[in-house]
Amino acid sequence: PTYIHKVLLDITGSEDLDLHRLAIFISTIEHLIRAEMLEYLYSAQRIMQVKIAGPKTEGEVDLVISAFMLLYAFGANLEVSTKRDLDKTLTFLQANHKGWQQLQTHIQDLKKSTTGTATDGFDGVMGLATAITQNYRDWHSPTCRDARERLLAMPSYKDGRVSVLDLTPVHLPGSRLLFAEAQDYLRHLGTLDETNASNPQLIVPNYLASQALCLTTASYYTVCCKSLCNDILARLE
Image (cartoon, rainbow, N blue to C red; front, top):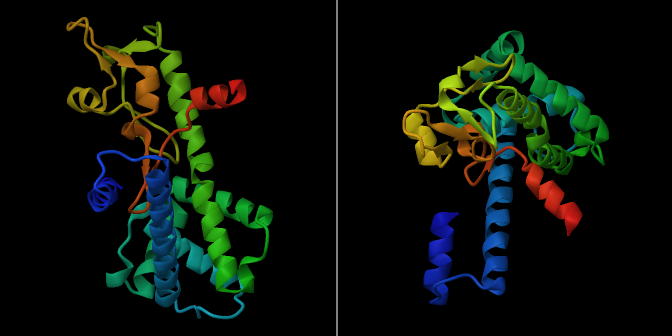
């Protein structure tokens, strides 16, 4: 996005984005995201040996979507993978990775609630993949909520801050390791209040909104915790 922003400013000879240029910028990003999703799905179907055109069985849809999620959520490189590689990976994740199991349950729930049928053809699979990516933050929300509740329950919590000395790494079942970041990284994220150098404070809202809790996904964006403040502002507006 930063590169596209620069290119757009160079092309238009402007120093900033007005409303028209902002619309172009957003449309470009949306186009690139959709193009990447199409590429992921084509690759997933090719590797899993599922025909692109025509109806698909439920089993074929599950195979394609699982391969798609290995790309989207885990960054797997399908260009150097075989179906056997992915079958072994998926079997291992299903047996040993609680987060993957929870994600599969989330996907099955989306399949039931998504308009249209994924088995209808490529457009159906694309519709399901789109629904998954659009609702990926909802699946991530319990981790964000758990982090927030743990921080607010710490003895040193006051005025939206906790002492860094209180932070102990916690591994959530089926999720990620929380509160394991080094102070240098927290400082880089803008989440530290070092007014008192002997007792630095973690700024809770900044931490919850930072990259520390984001999930890496596709090339053009990450999925981060939902801002509770934005919900309140939306209701006020």
